[in-house]
Amino acid sequence: MADYKHLSVMLKECIDGLNLKNGGIYFDGTLGGGGHSYEILKGSAPNGKLIATDLDDYAIGRASERLKEFEGRFKILKSNFKNFSNIKEDLGIDGFDGILLDLGVSSFQLDDRERGFSYLDGSVELDMRMDRNNPIDAKTIVNEYSFERLKEIFFEYGEERFSGAIAKKIVEVRQKNKICTVGQLNEIISQGIPKKFQHDGHPSKRVFQAIRIEVNGELTDLYETVLEMGRALKVGGRLVILTFHSLEDRIVKKAFKMLECDCICDKKLPVCVCGKRKEVEIITKRPITATEEETKLNTRARSAKLRIAEKI
Image (cartoon, rainbow, N blue to C red):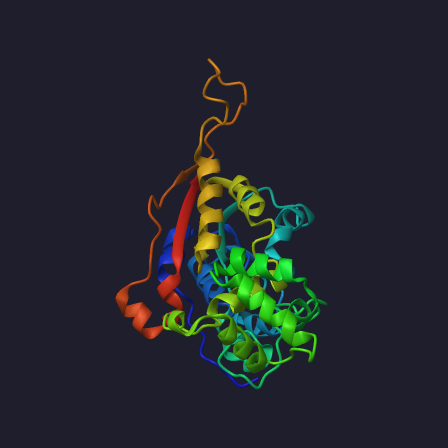
């Protein structure tokens, strides 16, 4: 793979949000290019520790090199951040001073056309796996999922209004020939969306997002994991989460609200019987968005939303 320039979205805002301190213990669940991890280790020097996870072997290799100067202060695991509770238990960590999630696809995964994440190069094969050992790739979904399931994921994960028409067209085409390339899928999607509705960006954008989410199980157990992370913080510890589409952001917002609420009893009850108590203070009453200057330099930042909560 050719070298690339990785730009961490809202890097300063994320690091400021963590409120780093010397000797703190931190978790970066989405290592990627290592940009956030580098700044966490730098900002928690000289004794701060970092646990980081990623599913991409290439990302792990690059980040390991980038973080070499902090040798002995970090541990990188090839794992999904949704295994957080098991990782915490296996490593014997009582609590974290800060946890960061930068959700979505890393820049180098999008830029590496061979990975099949992007709809811009029609010649490459459909893939979209963050973990290359995952037996399910984009080709599997497009060629083997039922019409009903395709329609469902396009609508739920891509918020695609023409999900039914696109799913129907996919099923029709694959009965004659297997759908293998980005270009083939682009053409099918274009045929499923009326021309007058194809002016709002690339017609494949929503469907590709939906397939990528399904391939990598991006939304599965996210709500529960955010709750676990909030509860694993030390008092004063920060949970910082960066999302890139509305589905992720809604889940994170819902989890933050659950952590912040003081009671979940039926309002008709005269007294609280649930025992639920407020666990965090939400620092960002409204999500932080990227500056105009950053969005000009990095188009990925346009849809990013940053939410921060602090353990009380």
